Image 1 (cartoon, helix red, strand yellow):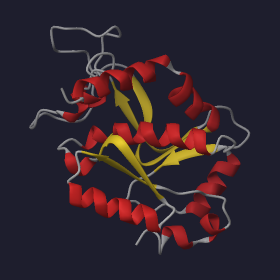
Image 2: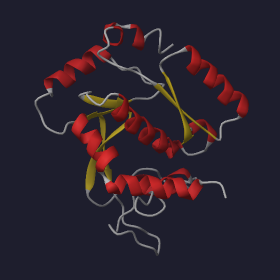
Image 3: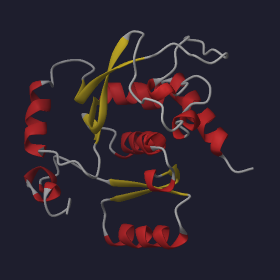
Image 4: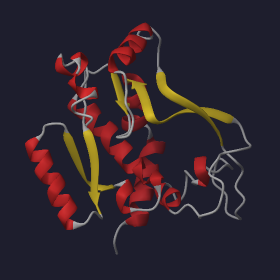
Length: 207
């Protein structure tokens, strides 16, 4: 459906927008992963990430953090001259013509971070252990220690809204667009992001 609607218009056909369906293969059933490999062989718009968990295979929607990291690092290597890097979700329709018009109007601004924005505050840690910042991440994930693993195992029944602390803007899943310099700083040169992913990968690695 996405291919026949959102991706059938001019921006994609003219090569102004490059689109990929990103799928994490780790922990998927063999039959499902084989089916996805077959689709990737037939279409050029499917990106399979071998070492990333997909939302279907785990209870936590925040597991997509591995796919987000995998996508941005791949895109930066694959299209190093791109001006913008972005992500959306498979249940979201993006008006690509309007998006390009919006980004064109922002092209002279430095370090643009654009999308469906929300505001998140980092609540102080309630647990005995403390992170260097003294705050927990959004959805109570501890960015400096447990990283993605703590996001996957969100305790059921607890509120998922962030509260308290200093609010910070962030782009939500349906539309997250980063200027090239922002994406490169976050996903290529930032040691904080690198350590975040290393810890998360280690915590869910098989023994």
